[in-house]
Image (cartoon, rainbow, N blue to C red; front, top):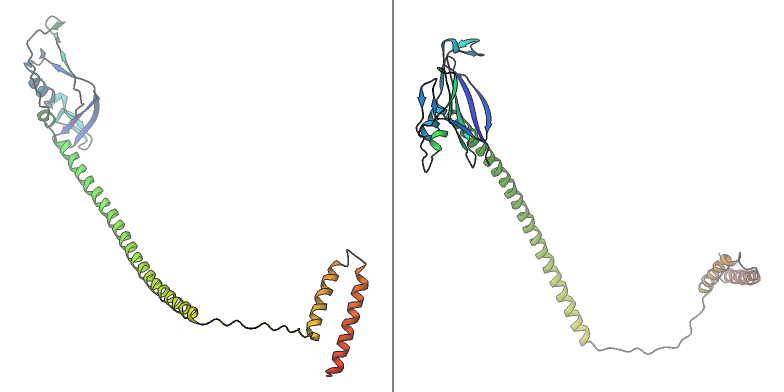
Length: 260
């Protein structure tokens, strides 16, 4: 809420290289009167302009440029990068008098405006932020391009899904047609059957003839069941032998009737 950002910069006049250092602040100190430099600020706007005014580094105060590898004339200053939501300004009402070598309180008048337009001070020596805005715009374009690509992929997927859905609907329609046709046929057959007279055939009480093959099948079934139960009961052995004897007898009679 109270934290802002300002940047201290040094720009070489020879190679135009600019070194910047970012700093955070909670309040800004404004000087009312500088006795050493002989400057005086009568209002807050003038104080801001002097605070952001660049300083010339020349002569003995030359700046050592790393690119030029030597001392060069340079410009040093500060500019505000980001303002806090609540800006606190502190007035420095004390100065140092070099004649008396004492700290002196400054009681001069200082005016405050009702509305302070900070846009003029933020744009003051504002080349860095213009570059940053361009970068932000480029980033936004890239971001929007990526978003559009994502939307394109989504639309392609939706198109594929719609195509698949259309194919599925066509196949379903064909199936429904076939089912309807089959139902119509069944209904037609049922109607015809209902119209047909029902014939109740007379039951014929005839005794089934016992064939030798039928008897053999029966005996084999009984033998199989008895063989399973032999381990449990020994009394079935006698019955099993009788059945075996009958089986042999039937086979013998069969061989006599139908010789090879």
